[in-house]
Amino acid sequence: METIKTASFESLIELAVPDGDGYIFTLDGESFRIKDTLEITGIASKKGYIIIY
Image (cartoon, rainbow, N blue to C red; front, side, top):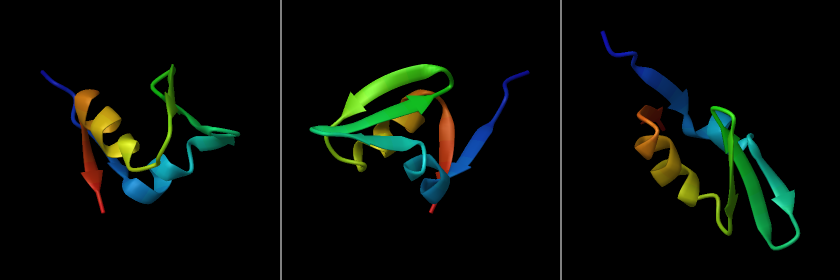
């Protein structure tokens, strides 16, 4: 049985911490260096999340 993960876009943005040049975004224990918070959608989708706007 597969687990369905959902998250609101607003809650995902709160996980992005400013880091001079961009942000450090951590999801499911994995950190990503991103330039723009719009990259969060792609990362969460690849990790199997359904994003609620």
